[in-house]
Length: 316
Length: 270
Image 1: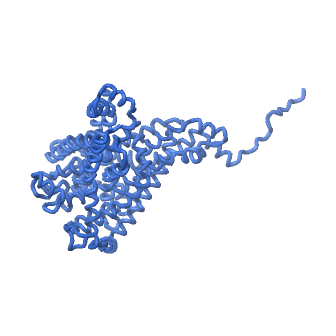
Image 2 (image 1 turned 180 degrees about the horizontal axis):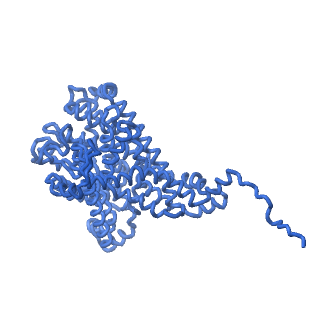
Image 3 (image 1 turned 90 degrees about the horizontal axis):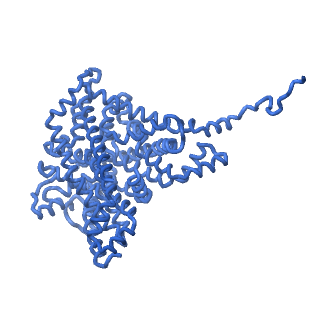
């Protein structure tokens, strides 16, 4: 028997060139997949998840920025102290009040403006851009301008409001009016943004619904309440939820209006849960206590979004 | 459609509502053009002056703050575009073990408020001696869960057939990303640019925490100190306000269309 030579396969395989080897790796979903998420995984690990864990540990420690080596494990003491702190409840009540007043009000104004702007034939883009501008303007710039507008005697807004029966004071420096000032500031900043969101929602409503409504004899007002508002319900949920989260995070505005005074000035009238957190952490250098406050804010936000999920499931 | 009368009322409403927006912006621009003697008065354009702009520009640290804001904003913007877009392509289009976990980790970031991270990050920055430096102001902020999500949602809408055809033509996964996906995502990238730019340009709490030397201030922090120091001179502070706001409005007007599409897709489908 003569040995058979396998002619189907070349005896020596040519070594694949570097280029084609890279090309083969480049066709591998797994290789390219990991390669492309590698940067965010590394950055996230260092600058997000590691600090997250660290902060969680801090929240059970008595630890100061000034002397971090003297940290002591103290269990839930930070959390307990916060819950017992009257200033925390004041701050929380301010945040809650801002939420309850400013969020529905800005949603309602945004909706009314969007519905009308949607029907306007000319200058639509100009109005939309104008209303939207506050949202992209720096909060520090906006607060600065509003402080002058609401200044005692000289402020344009103060003048107009005195005429309506309000006292002639600098709103941002008045214990009673500083929080309403913050509400006005918030609504002014966000209303245009939510109006654009509503405008987007309005585009998704098919026109035939209104045709049918008209055939059934619904007038403009009835069309608004019976057709537009129910159709926009998912958008309204979005607007309310995002509004709540924005208001809960309010910080720059109270920081700016306190000027050189302590955060929450005047006399704590504009403290929010975030200014409470910030002054504990960075004015009093209490890293552990501040971390516990941060996790309480985190818990509030999670609770609110779970509430939203329940609502959305029930409503839709 | 609308009757004449209802069109009239809609316009009336729009114009009345506009007043609330024109007044604050108008006040800022007008006051920035007044001389010291004219503060609080209504004067003719002939008496307006650019003195304040010259003053703020050359007699304060504003030029340095501008430079810092531009460097920090561009650094964060470019980093975000690269990191977020790559991650989004991987999460939308490539199959591998652990993809679900990575996606969960990315999405999870959207739930956590920054307060939770700021204390340890402050400590890390201090330990690295990155206080008062561009490193401290840029490196922790090179990625953003929300923007990855936005990009991923966009990539998911690109038809699979395009990639299959490209693969038949011999393109591998990396070339598909550069030659097919990127050219198709100009709109989505525009949205990322505007979100990242406005977010960084206007950000306040991080730069005020991570910097305590006025030479390293960004514009927002600089304006805040300018306001505290010159509160009695609204012409000076309003000049600062205008100078801080103009760049963002220019960027916004350039990318406006993409931005609104972005809101529509993330807001309503997400």
